[in-house]
Amino acid sequence: LTQDELKKIAAYKAVEFVESGMVLGLGTGSTAKHAVDRIGELLRQGKLNNIIGIPTSKKTQEQALSLGIPLSDLDNHPTVDLAIDGADEVDPHLNLVKGRGGSLLREKMVEGACKKFVVIVDESKLVKYLGGSGLAMPVEVVPFCWKFTAKKLQKLFEDSGCVAKLRNDCKGEPFVTDNGNYVVDLYLKKDIGDLQVASDAILRIAGVVEHGMFLDMATTVIVAGELGITIKNK
Ligand code: DER
Image (cartoon, rainbow, N blue to C red; front, side):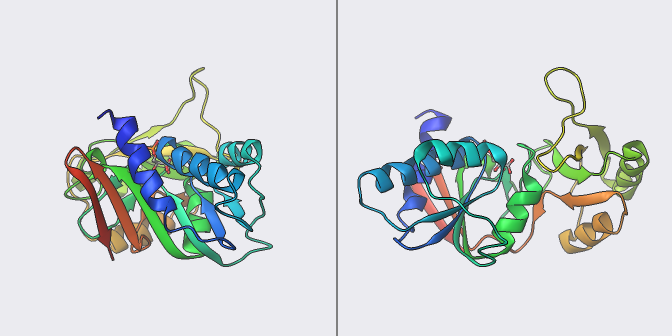
């Protein structure tokens, strides 16, 4: 099975949790895309109705619009019944790294407002500790003096061999989020220890808007692997 087929399997499994009448958080990324497509298909077939989608990015908003999924936002629906989204890393306690697609702020707002947050991943996303994949740990920062903020972030985790890099787009310009901010990616060589302490320290830096660690937020993680589907509950 290809990685994308595994992502689709996890996504379709998660959509089985969707009931008519729900207010749904619609995730962002290549795995969540399958879930949104599936929801659109079930709506079209009449197997689901009265769904209201709360998108976690402009990209997902466009996808949902093209599928005819009715949309709203957190101002009108401050409580969300269920959110389905992917993740970049999942640790054994169901803590996540998200945001390599750059949508972490809106994702964290929506997923922080939901009763159930179902995460969908292929098995390659499982890590022993957050940052353990050696891939980016995203932090959304204001563009104003981003170098100043990046230096503070790098210093914060210098014991973990942290390197902070501004994320650029394909044209070599700074990547700009849906909210008009920049993303500084942290590359860690070692475990950063207590995640809540790390999270609080990051958020104390004035130029930081939000970070990509989603701690104690996932209620269920659906993992699609070569040997089948594993469902992990909080
Ligand atoms: O950027 C994000 O937050 C995405 O949801 C990411 O965490 C998962 O993206 P993927 O499903 O394309 O791997």
